[in-house]
Amino acid sequence: MNILDKLHTMYTTFSLTEKKVADYILAHPKEIPNMTIADLALQSEVSEASISRFCRKIEVVGFHALKIELAQVTIPKLDPHPERSLLGQRLAHIKQNKIKEIEQTLMQLNEVDVQQTLNQIVQAKRVIFLAYGNTIPVAMDAAYRFNQIGIAANAYEIWDTALAALLTFTKEDLVIVISNSGETKDLIKAVEWCNTKEIVVVAMTNNQHSPLAKLATIHLTTATRERLFQKDYYFSRVSAMLLTETLFLLLAFEEPERLEFIKRHEQLISDHKI
Image 1: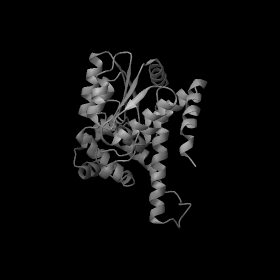
Image 2 (image 1 turned 135 degrees about the vertical axis):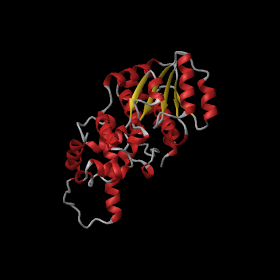
Image 3 (image 1 turned 90 degrees about the vertical axis):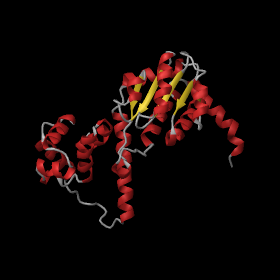
Image 4 (image 1 turned 90 degrees about the horizontal axis):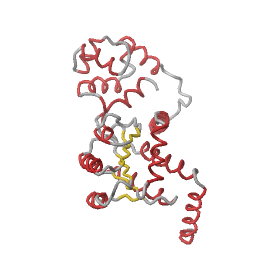
């Protein structure tokens, strides 16, 4: 993981001051190697001491080391497609970011946590995927896939309906919460209730230090590199979808019977296809 990948991964753990520094670095990575610490402090509107603390936070020995790492990842490379249009350049940028999201999400998975999650899914009487807002499609897709392999799972588009279903759960069931930020109030309240009922919760978020990550029984970290307008709002769903699909694939190939479920499902819906 290079220094820019690290900044993207750690972004949600930064304080407001640290985010100012990170925002400027991410927006001007090629300029930093030629700046002094005073220049960066001025441009990011923080103190020089804040820059030093930021370097310690991201585990580099100092500003000079930070400049070296940035220089290593921003050395101009010859464009193998110099005739590429602006649209082509943007498509290439999107491709690069999405590949990085996939690589980082899979690379940072803890095998012990993944195995515990698989065990909990198999042992659970029911599984519910909880999500809020624009992460709901990920939850809906996950529930569909799990049912395909014979694992009873649900997800709901309306939060009140999801909450009503959750209130019927016991410690024989499993709750999987999907949230990019890990800071959604309604999801936090739901997980707090689960804890009072001793219900196992698996949280999937971008931030291992988020409230949901801390409240969950098991936490799986996703990675994202896209931030809209350089703010906190993460709009990529690729890594969350990748994680649910990874669990689906691991479960599907674990037992031959689960693949038979998929075959039977495909047979039942075959009449709807040309």
